[in-house]
Length: 205
Image (tube, rainbow, N blue to C red; front, side, top):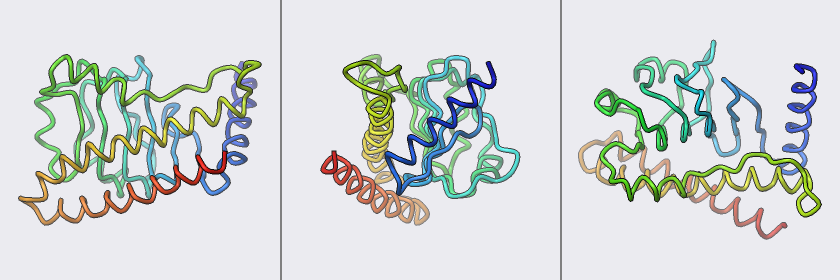
């Protein structure tokens, strides 16, 4: 069984490199996907994930941690997160229904997006926005390459939607803090780059 999983993982990595030669996406943490091109760690859609698994050594170069649709209750401290992820600027916690919202006050230098304070209607809307397609089995209509492209396209599209939320939140924080003014500028530039790459991928299909 482990051998089959290993072969599958190798195939996924090779397929990703073939589809997106300019990007490097690899498995990391507890079944997450680290995307060095978008600088995002994707850890979505795992109801058995009750805590964030931290890397043994520092994982540099990733600015966003996507943790949607898991079963997280708390996050590690801000200090520990910044130690393990030195480039981290934002975390998306949407879709973790039992998260302890009163713990969010400690995250003063990391932008956290969550369902805390949202109405049921807003939570339902965010569920549609944060859906990441899994790699489904090949079908006559969509072979494995097609399934892989759907998966990675959905990750890029998720990131673009997340940028918009982060920009609104940072616009408020930037009025009060020079630190968040710099963070806001960084995300605006990153959002433009990702949007341009998505446009290029669409044109190349």
